[in-house]
Amino acid sequence: MTHPEIIKKQKLFDRWASTYDILFTTIFYQAIHKRLLDYLQLPDSPNVLDLGCGTGRLLDRLAEEFPTLRGTGFDLSPQMIHQARQTKGDRHRPRLIFIQGNAEQLPFTDQQFNTVFNTISFLHYPNPSRILSEVNRVLSPGGNYYLVDFTPLGQKISHTLGVSPANIYLYSLERREQLGREAGLQCLGHYSLLGPVWLTIFTKI
Image (cartoon, rainbow, N blue to C red; front, side, top):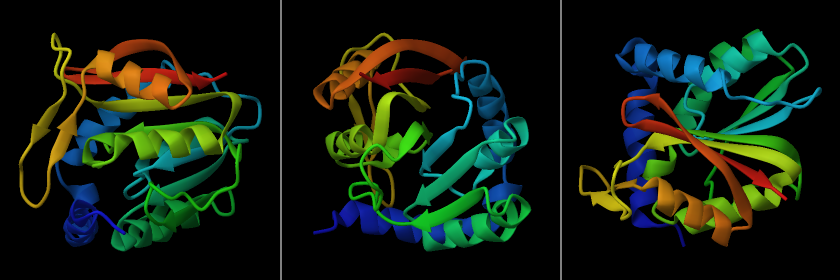
């Protein structure tokens, strides 16, 4: 059964999709993605999954930087996926594809991807353990998972922010590590990208 918060999130981002790329988020995400690239270690033929891809901006940038990259964008919002297909998908066809669905049940085979990204989307998941379990399932051994999100620094607890239309969940770096470990992922390190936005890199052993 779909969590009620997930349904609310989908409706929110459906409404936001048509203007998402022209709001302040564009500058913010550009800065985050630029700093993220400094920490990437991709294989020779990257096959990457971007969870919570939105309108596909990260995959668009990765496709420009890495000519051999193949990427799959995955998002809860049908309208976000529509926007991504119309712009980034067309520009990089057939290297990039975009699929709508719930990240708690990924429609991919085991070990399908050698890299997985989550950029400012993990905070929306009401069941983080399910997400990480699915990441571990679809990630090939030795592959990396790049988790980028806001974190309450200096605290070992997690925070739930009751904002409309549904909650936002912020995890300390220690809690990220713990969640990853419970899912079978090893933490390689934490890195500051921009203010309270931190990158945590996991690998699948």
